[in-house]
Amino acid sequence: MTADTGYRYILATGDEGEHRLELVHSVHGPDTEKLLERAGIRPGLRAADIGSGIGVVSCWMARNVAPGGEVVGVDISEEQVRVAARRAAQMKIDNVTFVTATSDATGLERASFDLVYARFLLMHLPNPEATLNEMAALLRPGGTLVVEDGDFEGPYCSPRSSAYERCFELYRAGVRLSGADPLIGLRLTNMVLNAGFSRCDVSIAQPVLREGEAKRLPEWTLVEARDKLIEAGLTTDEEITAIAVQLRRLAADTTTRFGMAVMTQVRAVKAA
Ligand SMILES: C[S@@+](CC[C@H](N)C(=O)[O-])C[C@H]1O[C@@H](n2cnc3c(N)ncnc32)[C@H](O)[C@@H]1O
Image (cartoon, rainbow, N blue to C red; front, top):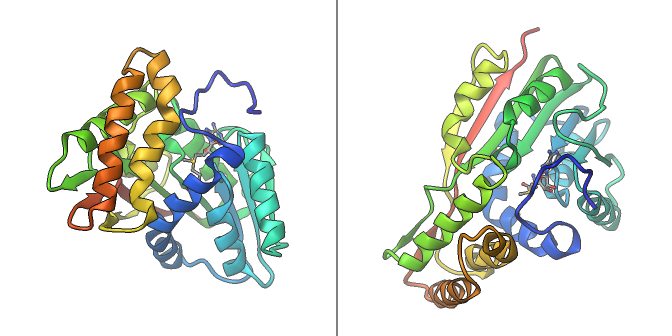
């Protein structure tokens, strides 16, 4: 279940979406970890992961703030929170907790975190500025905001594939159904500055895949969004099936490269 905010997330949550988010992390995790290291993650810090999903990044952060530190993961979906807590317990990580709340009103203590992080969250929100303001409010003076999000016009297939391009066209249209912006990465720097940070550091990361299970992500993401895309009249069952067949073939072809979401990674320190 998801708290009723009128918000419409186009992908599956809970157990159904768990494997997809694990794969997302296998693709983007190495760049995320480098980003958090540059942001100074270290033992003793109190950190928050907003829109924490199944908690893959929260758990990595929890390991890196131990001993002495702790992490709070926040997600609007009770299913995601349940899966995240189960995974943390299985990994015997005891310095992370997960709470169900909306990202723009977390209910967490103001000015109490050293580091506040979000990935692939703002692109799903009709009002991402409200969440950035909340994240800023959670930081103590001198604390670090870390956000990374995608530009979904950036994915490419080499050699070019019309199925790959149509897959991402549909994905962008699906994200826009809820008034959200699948190209938010392009605006992220200015959004952070507008949230009251006087300067920020920016980097770009685009994973490229030639082989491996994660190369099936575009196909699986499309299939997960199938019902919502059809319901909105954006496509048909036949088209999704035809694209999925093409994507599966391309994923198995190691001479074909998939450029994944272009991630804008922003770090900014709250004025002391
Ligand atoms: C694509 S997943 C990303 C999860 C995680 N950050 C990661 O990168 O693995 C987006 C997550 O944001 C959550 N979410 C969407 N809207 C939210 C909101 N308004 N408040 C809190 N969480 C939200 C969804 O439930 C989902 O778990």
